[in-house]
Image 1 (cartoon, rainbow, N blue to C red):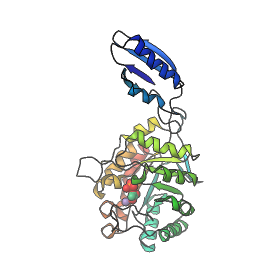
Image 2 (image 1 turned 90 degrees about the horizontal axis):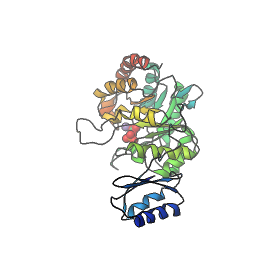
Image 3 (image 1 turned 90 degrees about the vertical axis):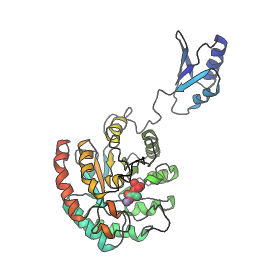
Length: 339
Ligand code: PEP
Ligand code: MN
């Protein structure tokens, strides 16, 4: 930590700060400038950030960390990319680019299986579908629950696709883990730490969405909970943040791709469906995401978006998904990946 003292502090006042730093178990290193004094406090600041309390001293102007608050997700301690083993034949974060596709909500067998067969044929390797749905209103469709999980499992057996679905409650962690290959933690739960821990403890790969009002540092720290609970299989998923813009449902922050790649060794997945709320924008944002180095896409696809029970405006129909995959192929190749 760097402790900046206010200008014109007496030696006596400086001594008080030094004593406090020592009391907290750090080694002070005093640097006296012309106008003011700066004290470096040497010690492991990531374990407990007690030095921040020095801010209450009247002679202290600022206390600044020099170490990152996240350790395990950080690239500093793990320079090579993490490759997430979803299944023997599906690795995310490696050379192969993956597309996760399927309906926002699992509605019925026909809807799910039709979608699964079609997205698989088009090139997807992972089927998405919400069985437990986090809806803003309690009067909207809440998902089929366990029945939805069973349908996902059936679709997986029939198509060979892996499955990703959202976990909404700690009470369901074992149940969801039984049926899915990847557990999705949604934007509304991105800082629900008990839920994240419960998900991590299942041992399943975790896809952690970015909270819609979350800073990147907070998101990385939420991811830290997964790795700190002995689950190395974490993927970050950008799905748009809330801004003042009204042309899109959310503002899809593609700058997170190079930032997450720089800060972390974990893969980054882009969800342009929640990210824009508009099916007409999904293809362009997929191209941008792939070109910028995303490791995978999460795309909502429905056989009849107009009749969807949730998020109809942002879902691609089966034909449009097929053309999407064709259209992003050159971008996948130019990004040095293969599909
Ligand atoms: C979803 O994937 O359907 C979903 C609810 O996502 P998010 O948590 O990003 O809103
Ligand atoms: Mn959705």
